[in-house]
Length: 122
Image 1: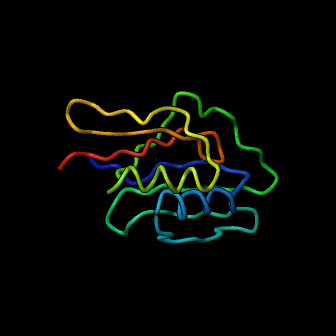
Image 2: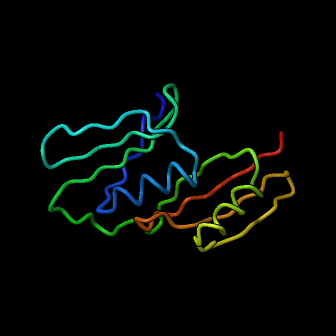
Image 3: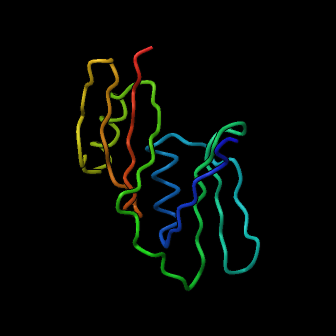
């Protein structure tokens, strides 16, 4: 078994796409509308787990993101911190440096989901 995707319902599709592509650096793998009221964007690399952004017109997503976080591995935590600060996104926690060499910090995406950027020592 392996993870295919994590779905985030959003009423802020444009803001969410901008966050996950410009800040998190994810690629738009596909984007489609299965019907006139639904917009779906699959973000990530073709052979990896995806972040699915789901927007349904006329529906307000439930605000149940508390306790949910998404971890994204990055090459340089310092570069992501610089980008986040330049874009005016508040850091909610960190940066934290563990004895193992792992470093991370957290922000909230436009939907209130905690996103943890992680740099692992190689």
